[in-house]
Image (cartoon, rainbow, N blue to C red; front, side, top):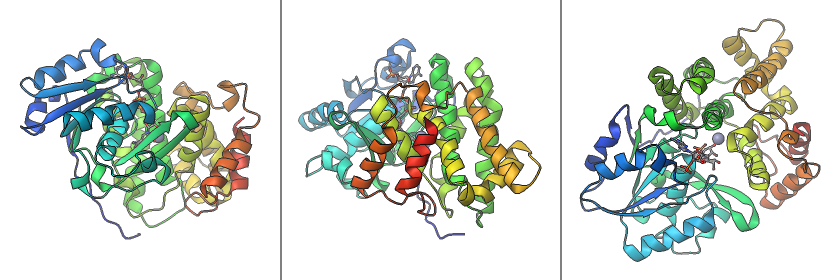
Length: 387
Ligand code: NZQ
Ligand code: ZN
């Protein structure tokens, strides 16, 4: 097992009715910026619950953070934070609002040009330099409620870039599974597939000595397979909703990544597809992931075989099991309402591979994956196979 440090200071408050605890979680003297997205929180009553819990607090609201949050929009909120001397930010939303708030937290006191946070991928380690924030999660998927990463889109250049650091964990996150009742089917499906792929990024590498990490990862996959199709049909079923939400958090709160190799190339390529075509994050993963496993078959065969045996009970030779495990993954994605070809989303795909490869080359991203052997040629093949 590789050496590791596990640091996760987020106070996770999970369960029904937990939004009531907000007043005890936010610092007493806080001047709060309540940040939200396109307005779903007004329709499902979450805004009302939050405001009720925050009665007596000094709160300014900032709405309009879009899915795949834009740097340009967020800079308007940075100006408000600076002018109004905001000292606490509350994100009420899904991964996009939470990621947006991480950027606000980092950018408010940043001494340089905030675009460099993204362009230079600045690492934030000093908690005294960021504005503290908490979250009320409304969409299980990204794990952003319990990790310190963020992905922001620069609209003007159509780039989607990530940054983060140990100073950017939420102080607290309230995860009430009943919030999923108002989610459209498409977002429920996205949540399952995003979380599933987060586990695969950290699990489908090569055989190693992290036996416990593998077993935890497999149990998250099994739980997502168990609840995924049903929760889309019955989002008000609390057993399904709570297992869905907790699985998503556990898939990307850092735990299963400790002491083991990880890949993340599916996400890096997927982010480009969202930046270029606006395809939902999870749906890009369903397009790219299986083709990445096919192109990197020899590298990943050992782990694909373990995955096939333990998750899908497959039998046969290692080659057969590994190959069938990829097919079963695609099948699961289809069950979850995903389309798995780029041409299902756009007719304008012929030059996508060239474009992505050129971009990665310019950024110096020439060797990705757990063995740093996903070269530009491999990326070209993966994207072309995804057409
Ligand atoms: O904006 P509103 O009106 O709130 O509507 C949102 C949005 O349209 C809606 N929604 C959220 N909660 C709802 C709801 N509608 C009804 N009822 C509710 N309870 O759902 C839509 C999508 O929301 P969004 O936050 O964009 O979805 P998600 O949570 O999937 O986040 C995706 C973003 O997270 C990034 C992605 O790249 C993408 O930008 N990721 C962040 C990660 C991280 N920080 O660790 C890791 C992930 O791999 C991912 O890259
Ligand atoms: Zn993801």
